[in-house]
Image (cartoon, rainbow, N blue to C red; front, side, top):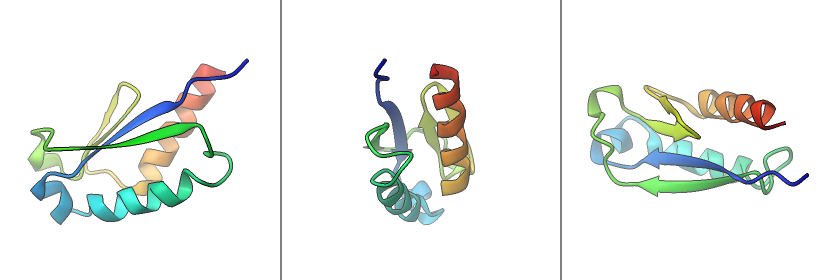
Length: 85
């Protein structure tokens, strides 16, 4: 059974950019082209999510990730994949 792709929203508002969201987006873009993430996720760049004090912010499926990192996002994506399976 084919699974739908996970949606990963990455805030690129000014505070999130200062906190490293641009680098996180770049790292996730690279990771999304490699196994096991290839074809499993869709990265979506957003404008400000109005959670500036918690920058950088991302959303994976229905989970908000505050003060996040590439590793935290990949961990949440892994959990979401297990929940789908």
